[in-house]
Length: 165
Image (cartoon, rainbow, N blue to C red; front, side, top):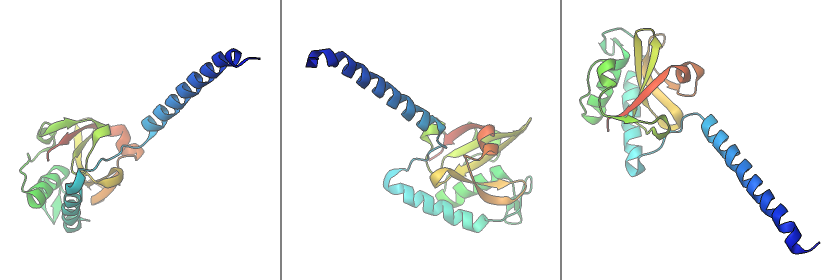
């Protein structure tokens, strides 16, 4: 056989291999847990301030309407973290927080973004994104804690994200 006779087979092989590789990469990317991007040099500062706030609030029990270390609800926790950590005033309740700032695609999450969940028929929940797909929030069952966006409970209930910084 001459070199020209194998060229179509080679081209076909390369095209199919490229297509298969593209599909594999696409599937791998879509199956990953939400990736959290960084904000460049200031991402360390944002993360450090968030973790300082978390350390102050960690374990605080959940209390609907609560706004202090004796008890706090999710939206008050988020409001207080942004006020105390960044001097940013955001609305008090979750429904208003869902309209504050700018919309963010789940694939574009950054440290400090707000994530929102539909946890009941008429119940919303909010948390703050950390590195690696983690987020901090005031859980009704365990108080202020860190969870992961990839957990099936949160993944199934995720509804949107907002950027406030």
